[in-house]
Image (tube, rainbow, N blue to C red; front, side, top):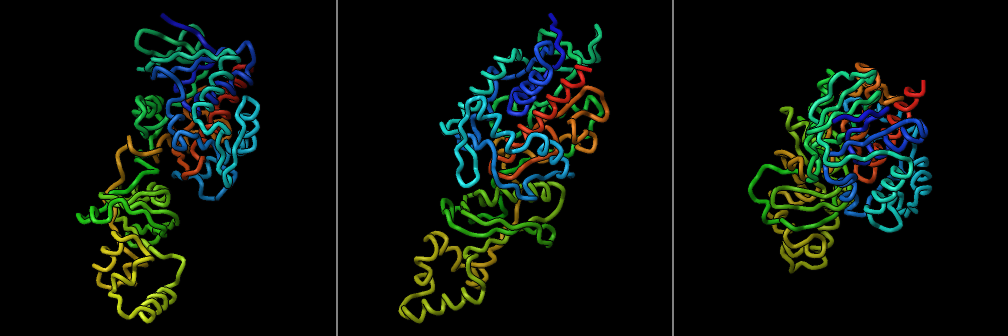
Length: 400
């Protein structure tokens, strides 16, 4: 059996849904659009974002929000479909944005709301959604179409094709990286793919002693002895190493360094609000005020009990507090990562249109590309922006 469409979108996640909606809006009633999703329903990965609340964007625009071999690539789409455009789009289709210090959520505090309004919008525009459709191969099209998309039991013919399959990250069924294989079939280079926004496993066997501790701190990453980046916030000490948002932000660099044969070391400052001299004065003052206290007792009130035991076991207390060393062994598995680093080489994709430079009428969107964002809604913003740009341009080509 076969169906013919102007535009086919492979993947019904955030970028795929936006691509299909944008294509239909741009192309109008005469432009037929279909989403092919391998799961039994679309938008499943969206449901897990923001702890089920969907942090769908962020008002802050730091220079280092996006990573990749060429992070500047992201700007092309982000300018054309900006955070402000995203807010307007979602407000128009039913999402009232809730601003939490720049982090944007739906007023309902439910990720399901975001999926629901996207599905309603797609349906109202006439986008066809085919679930339980796993794409097995893409061939040259026939009957005047550019692409023939093979699934188990069906053929779909399309003039334009948007690959929005996502990455290998997430425990959601279907996050298997099949999009990379499809991209490679069109001779696209894949930048090695690794887990990102993940906790870090560290070398050593004594971590059970501090497992469960949550404490404020600053964590710095060094690769082959050279400073890379630092982050500050709540750290979660675990039986395998360390976790928490600051760790997630560094994990992209740490995991890639280790897997490519480099040494990655973390230095933790458990009291970053004080300089070394101020810390020494504080400890001296506490000892002077309570001379009867032992070293361990002097730290009560400064750090959690489990952490105190670890700190006093080190040779130099001040160094242990300010530069506690950990060597990174690896990140967690793909299923435990929020996103992936790596993906389709962006030098082979037009940053203004998301169209392949190697194959006319082939487009990319979302995590499949070698762009990943920091925590805080940036990965979803990339999905919305790249999806919108890919969809619009695919439809524009169809109107020519």
